[in-house]
Length: 123
Image (cartoon, rainbow, N blue to C red; front, side):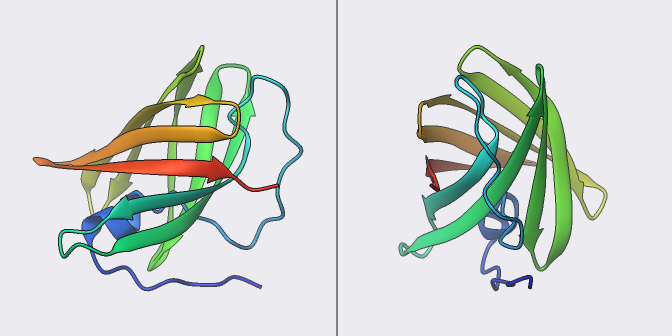
């Protein structure tokens, strides 16, 4: 079953690096792979929460993104840093950040707007 969350802002869509349907992936030590709960503050002030399912194969990373519809982003990981790129309505968006263990932080940029987010790996 796929749960859909309404997206109230661009950050809600792209920082949503979110996919609820898939069960948590087995995680490898030193891997970004897994299901992450992400939080960010909207332009109106309240905190939004979404989920991300991230797969990692070596240094390559793929994230399934669900919001209003499904998106995907791909990129690379190097050490504790990651960078992803995806498209929404023919406009690219960029996600970058760093993680340590079960916590991550980063930013989403689309055009001239940047949103910061934090995340925690679901167990």
